[in-house]
Image (tube, rainbow, N blue to C red):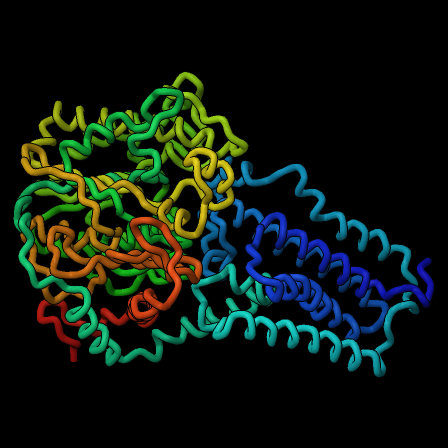
Length: 620
């Protein structure tokens, strides 16, 4: 038995958990340390949080303290470990809305297994120690109720308050910067961050109840003065009456375009397509935790995704003014083709809200062991089978195709690998190039079948990468491939994804270098179709006009303008990547936050229910 003079079990558990959490922060989350104060804070907050949580034990009778301590040790470890798994995939931390997306878990399969390492068992060693000690500890060695609860609670609260004060000194207005989850975790710890996230979630849920539509006046004025183009595009109406085909290219980033592995082009078809299309070489994805669903939301609405969770889950029954609904009012039929189940990302609900006529999902496809890779039907079979169903749509149609094969963990049978794997320390990056090449071949075959079936000539084809495929977790391998260090500037540049607008038979195609993003797709395509969206509320701009300065805002507060790139609190020259001293980025930084706030107000408050889009006025 552990004797009376031994440390109480709850304190042993708190110290062990604090050490483990600090290890996770430094070596798994790899939280960046920029100064000595940050180092102190990072060392304090794991122990402050652990002591606070475990100190609640003193409120219990000694016989129940042991049970509470060992169960809490396990529960907190599981919460920490779930964040580890999520971080490895997304370089981000869990939020309450993400936890509500549980119906996605069943489809993750090998993706989750690829994120679990044997060495992760070390993260449960302290739990095993606590459970072992709980069998040997004497009940009377535990802290007694009288007096002890006040001293223990006082010490725990003092530690947490010291942590918060230092955090506010190091990062003023920390709790106003809710989009920067890494800073929150780094300064207050993952568990206090989760408590804060719960409070924030409750607050945002109340916004819809309190909204009355008056907020739309300021938003409408901002969009009219700062975003809307007053210039007629050179391509306005060029695609009027044509079919529109979107290809949402899973996890496709721009760094693969015109690059080779061992002398072989990674994307030979897309490289050639540049010469016959409008290609935007500085086009950025603007997604957050919703990934593919976020890209769909941004492209269809020209609104920002939420900083927490996925709009497709949290606000799927809002009023929107999305492209499918708009073009439906102009005589188009619409459909989404995706060989996945209808409930993934809550698409069966959200697509109704966006105005799609139909969703052609996995049940419409013939899947066999021979044509299935990773997440489901391989891209070649997907496109081949889809064209037959595409022909049944009433013309003109608006059709979106969402690919699957180039998805983490980027697995591909050897016989389908037509380019060598890369050689680096990252298995994920090494395999990524083989699945990208496979997708490139699939898109080429899709183009050919569209031609063979007579669906090509009278269509415009839009191809865009939906989000990044290689996260910050693989920065060392990416630095090797690119031949340069991954600074915050380079990390932001890696958020560029390919964007093609291909118009069969059209002359004048070219590479366009101005900064652009997924937010700009909606106004650009509607303009090309000759559909007036003058009364709309959107934060993107027609890319074929030039009377509005380019401005691309990412969900984490980073932005790219004509001259500057702002990331991780630093201002850079956009062209050279040189870090700039001074406050050149400050005015645009405020503008970026303003746009994010306005978009959030629309989504959280469901403000479009108060807006008349035909007249561009707030409805009575």
